[in-house]
Image (cartoon, rainbow, N blue to C red; front, top):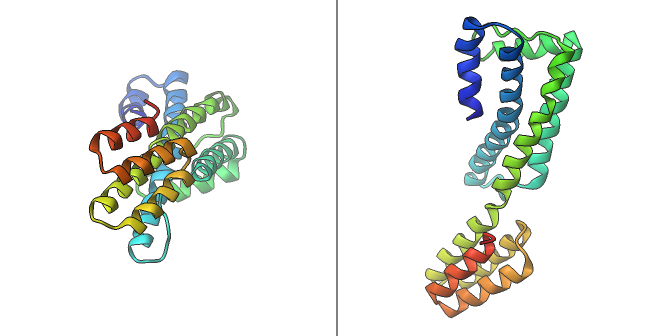
Length: 191
């Protein structure tokens, strides 16, 4: 949604209705979109490295979300209050095409709380990570790879699932009952 707002605002609304609101709307949308895009790009890069055997686990982690939110917030503040930062960022964006223009405007800092929306999106995504490992454990168990299934359960716990939810999933996997496994997955998802 933030991407759609940003594109519509920057490509149409700013030209049709230039002013304070369209300027701030771009800042808000960008502050929501940038940390999410940054964590996704890092995840894709880590997945490629993992496929080549150069990285261990590309899964989203809390520190990646925090780092993206902090980096975007600090970069935004710097570009809005320090002209050399604004021109450097504009030049870097220019490498992607076009002629971006970044205006130093301290009133744009009113949009800064929008990074909290990106933080909330990151937290929602983090809640899904243990389920991915749980499904990997289920697939390993169905292939008869008990050691791999146990290793995946360790990852489920490392990814933030409660010990009780992991224990329930381990028992369900050992039982082989699809009903118990589904109940354990629902518990893991907090439902």
